[in-house]
Amino acid sequence: MKTSELQGKDQAALTKELNDLLKAQFGLRMQIATQQLNNTSQLKKVRRDIARVKTVLNQKDAK
Picture 1: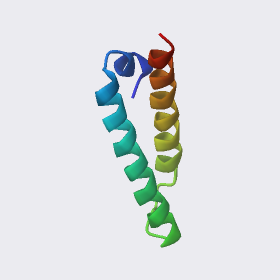
Picture 2 (picture 1 turned 45 degrees about the vertical axis):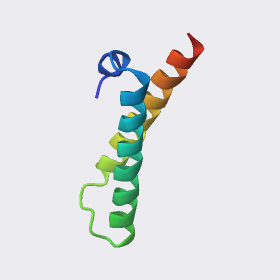
Picture 3 (picture 1 turned 30 degrees about the horizontal axis):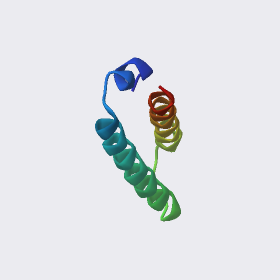
């Protein structure tokens, strides 16, 4: 996910995207806890995507 893609979305879409990413992060954390996750780099990608979405949301709030 790129920042330029996120900047084209409105706040409602960004909020939905954030909720989806938070649910995905929770699922990945549960998979790590039960040792079902083989590719642990997915967690890092999701965490960074969450940060990107939050950054764009904060930029839109500042305007």
